[in-house]
Length: 80
Image (cartoon, rainbow, N blue to C red; front, side, top):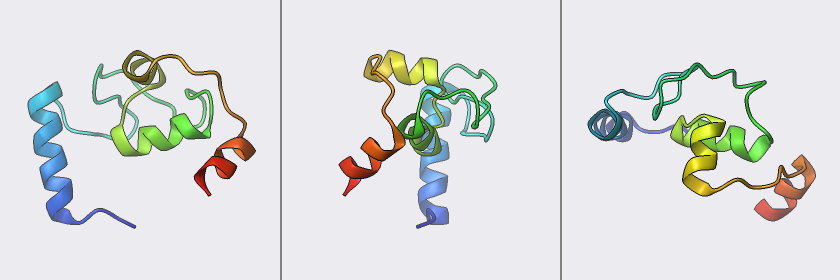
């Protein structure tokens, strides 16, 4: 389900205030590092988190702790 324009505007204002930049595809909102969606993440869960938060793998690990990579099947089972 896509975000409403009102929600997008709110999130952009919040991240701009918190991190000094708005979420941009291909860039981490926290550190500004370039992100390759297909190559830079340890598993599908980390890629999903990037879609939500625009945080690179390194920033996710810093925020949430380093987790062992999960197999895609494990994630799908956990989501059900």
